[in-house]
Image 1 (tube, helix red, strand yellow):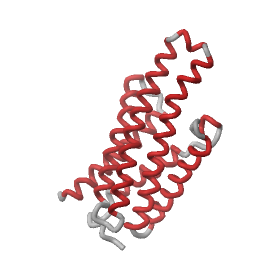
Image 2 (image 1 turned 135 degrees about the vertical axis):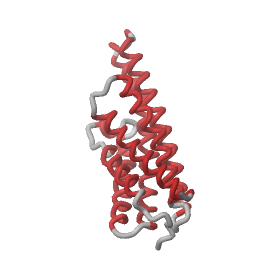
Image 3 (image 1 turned 90 degrees about the horizontal axis):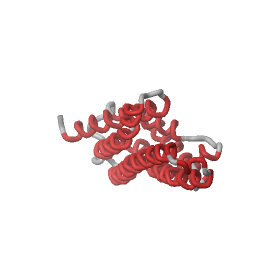
Length: 202
């Protein structure tokens, strides 16, 4: 396999696996240890997935844009790892501390992980918008529609987080675009494996 094919495979497998871990951690009743494994594995695998996608498009017409998108995606992967580890540590501490009954203390402590959550959404939102533009520029046919969907969904994720800051939109009773972005990412990482190795497309 050429280096480009290897990066495409690495990006596709790791990225798709990351999204599946996201859905498993969010929606399946997993044992505690397995829940931690799926949640904490999501970010690093996603970062590798974005790295592979960025490498795949590095020879195309949107090479510089793909590099920037991959940078934001990798940052998002590690931000979400920080967010989830801090979140679970705070939840465990509050559950065993007597101060858990003080609403002001709970709200203040919870703000920490909510703020990091917004940072994660912003980083991955920018990555999805930029990779959406890359797919629009470098791909053909229906894949361009996937690119357009990435621009729209990433933009909505960013816009809603800015509008409702400092709380994530879901905490304000609004729409959580995260699962929709996750579906886009799954389609993009799976679709990456079907893209021609040569990306020098119009």
